[in-house]
Length: 138
Image (cartoon, rainbow, N blue to C red; front, side, top):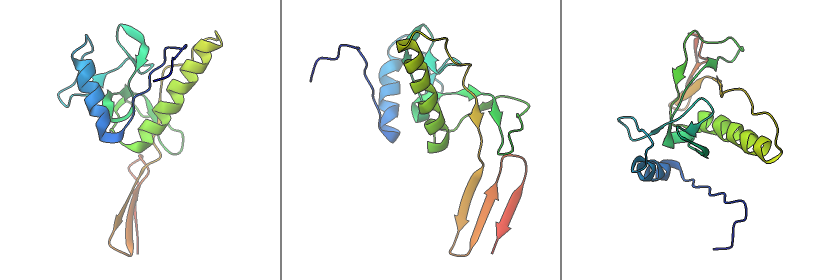
């Protein structure tokens, strides 16, 4: 493995990320009953601001906005699926970039809930936009 002058290690891998979470569980990092690492509002591990967990590795409770940009009343526990993970990854990349450039850190992470889509069979789909709206099309 080549030398890493920035001392940056990135571990990724879908459900394989849970193995990283379990490895961190042996550290002082707290985990939930599913084995996901409980993170700070900036997605870092408590006591280790240099270590981040995102996606299905992380137990993230964050404020959310729906598709229309309306803020949800209460923070939500984010599911370990692609949509939150993509936003979390972009957020952590912004934090790392700002640290390297010695800039002020961004505000705590918040999730933009773009809704859910389910396809049922060949001709029916269900769509939920996170604001109690369900649409079925045929």
